Image (tube, rainbow, N blue to C red; front, side, top):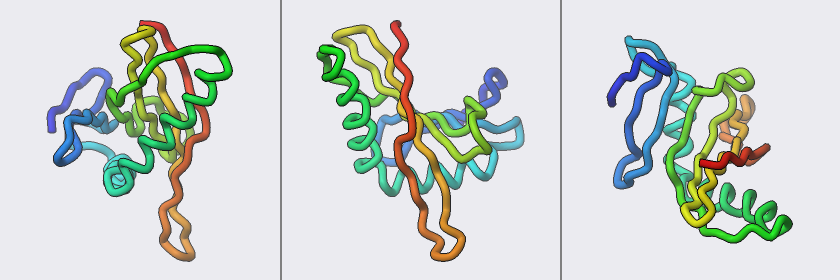
Length: 127
């Protein structure tokens, strides 16, 4: 892992992938809650990527936008949205020069210990 003082995050990749992950933290290490979210995300990575693509494709189709978004990175805690219970999966669409981010909620059921994650919003930015 590599620490970048600005924006105060650690950069790494998931095992056996080239997917870049960004974990908010300080110079002593990434924040524990972000590491926990990243580990849970890595276990369900294919499912989460599929959910993210499905989430934005509904909007793309309704607006007549074509393209084939590909994963760029996953941000854990960098945006400081919520109470460190959200992360964003970033997709790039080279055909339309658009960066899509799908925000996922993250929570652990305290009764069963089950991790629950799902898309709750998205953003679209031109490059």
